[in-house]
Image 1 (cartoon, rainbow, N blue to C red):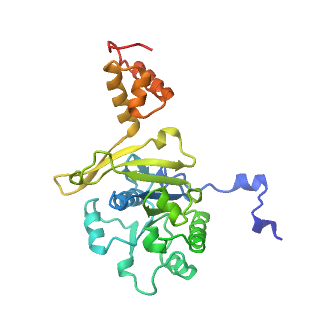
Image 2: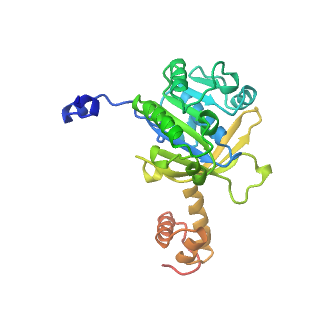
Image 3: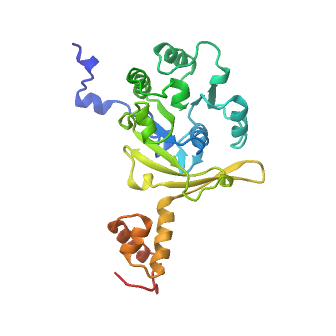
Length: 300
């Protein structure tokens, strides 16, 4: 058997290989990253996916992530129609030549099914050479609503093929971990797994606001994977702007408030649902910043 087929590489050849560009969207998306975004229906997954696509294709920022340069992006819309996409894109800014859409509602030809080899080839032949492909969503584009190992394996081959080509893929999935298991979609196939959740006190009138959690983050630093609280706000010019803050900062503010009320570290950590060690870490940070000077209660 040919060693090259198996994938053996001498160390000097491996070291001499050209490295791909560092990031498509720093720090979360590199060339070849396979990412999964999941959450309940209506939580705002498509809005986030569009924001990611926009930032990557424009070199702009989104939720604290930064496009390293304008990169070609393909958004495959299996659920949003043309009118809805137009409405949402108008809130982001002027149309970008680096961002293209494939809208399933306007697709002509056999049904697009990314768990089918022929359908995969037809799509890849038409899309050019995007650096990032957004697939919204797995249920509409691959028909994965029930466990089907064969269909999942076919989709996984497609994803791995894109990864081998140095292309990043963001796959959108409805539901939480149970829903992913129900369709046979394992986390271990992905480098990055993000989940979106409504705040506990969310009400329908609050609009698009959510908490974004990193459930898997291969190769990212601890500071890069802190949960994010985000809200979409309308501006007077008709555009929309995302307001966001890392939950670490919100948690820290809450911890300082509780400590200043006189709570001890263990009680403060318990109120936040955090470990005792995290409670003391938050206390040390507050002390370094001089935020507990003159605060009542025990000094531990």
